[in-house]
Image 1 (cartoon, rainbow, N blue to C red):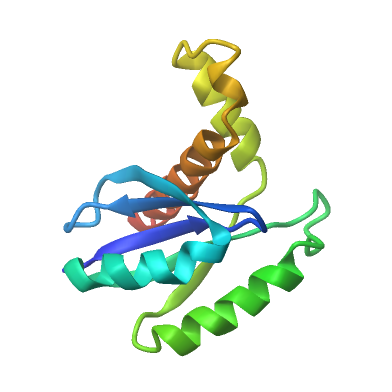
Image 2: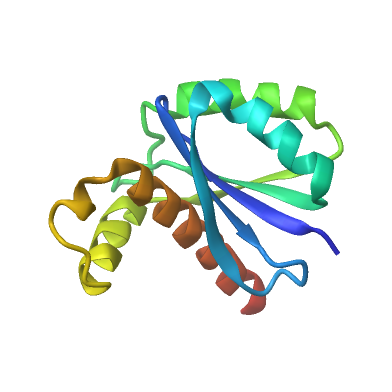
Length: 139
């Protein structure tokens, strides 16, 4: 069984989280510059088997699509071209940044550490992945 890779895609940075090989535990992997994302994924896939890309779907409070969806769809098209054998699923990512920030507070990170946007992106990707795993196990 391969891993599930979750992406919290952004114009500048993308947070990445990954499961273990049994697809039970979600862990933050890293945050990469979005311009380097395809290159990072190519290198990662040389050493790891990935069964699924999970990409956050930004929505407004009224469930309408966020403006950022336009550039995410362009990225998904590129991802599908580069890695045609790996399926892609989307998951609602509303509140993940707020939850990530609260996680940092609850974890005791100092105010200066909580300003690290790359860390917020990585935690957000982990929350997206954990939400998916939870919903998958309750089906």
